Image 1 (tube, helix red, strand yellow):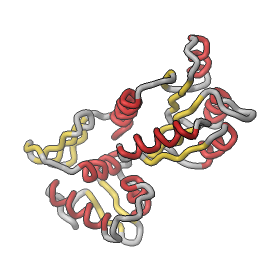
Image 2: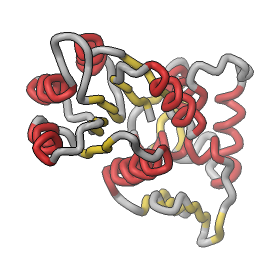
Image 3: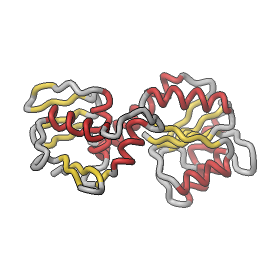
Image 4: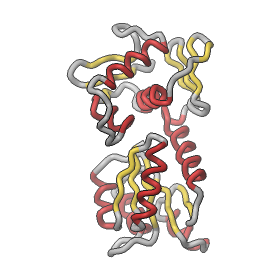
Length: 224
């Protein structure tokens, strides 16, 4: 997932960026409401982690209300040291989807993000069937003709990215950013090798299978 973190505590930003990066997420950070709201309105994210107490003219509640008024439906998790019920109500009324009170558990945050991923994957459908391949998005289990297939973490993330965007051409650059973030140590043929392995594991023919190569553009997964 591509996550926007709007948090003025730079130490916490580094910690969350590292922990979520280890899970394969791409994290972009802003340290005030003005810059955070600009990023939220001009870039595409899968999740916004938004601190309530921010420096500047816009606090977290203001930012949330502003992006909702502009029709942005990206899920928002509010982060706050305030535990009073009225503070949480204000955030939820502004359009937040979830709330975490500081100090919070990184493990709990990761669990909530995984839950969000399961709801969003393939439009919230818990099981995706593509020909003889069945993907259980809740357990991340994959079977071919009823037999389990062991995919690596990276291979499953690539498959997850495709089933989250059925019928859409995903450029190579988008896939690289989703899978590796800013890691530049990957080889130039990393995407091609990954797609080749994924097709082999799932029994998808390179020409006739549902995972198409769109020459000069990227890759597309056809789901009937």
